[in-house]
Image (cartoon, rainbow, N blue to C red; front, side, top):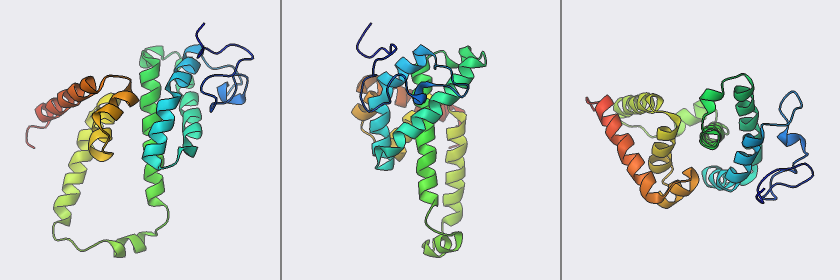
Length: 194
């Protein structure tokens, strides 16, 4: 058994995560999570923590987001949809990125009323074309699978380097770049009118 494995009475590595006997590792019915799910969470924790710190400028939300994603993934596995979770680490990390990005979007929405936000926006003659471009970008992103969407968002929206993307996705920086280029080619084929 390697040092990252969970066994009764042992504290998982890294120490930032709760102990193996904590409620964190229990599903909504009070049963211990699938050991493969626990192992994946422990091995991905440094990447999850780093992603949250970079995306939200605060790592405090990482544990809550990880717990929510672990519970949802456990439910998917428990409901016999194991085929939907063929690659548990990839599935878990993609769901985690989605959760943290949702938190980032909520943070942007807090703090200004709609009226204050409306009046704080500069007047722009090209607002209609910008809105249409944004809607088209949303349509394109919805057409991608989670892995492709994560690549595009991390590179274009969040400005990660190839090295950072590779580390977060568990691949080499060269592989991340190749997969990104392949994703762009697939987008071009699907949306030729652009």
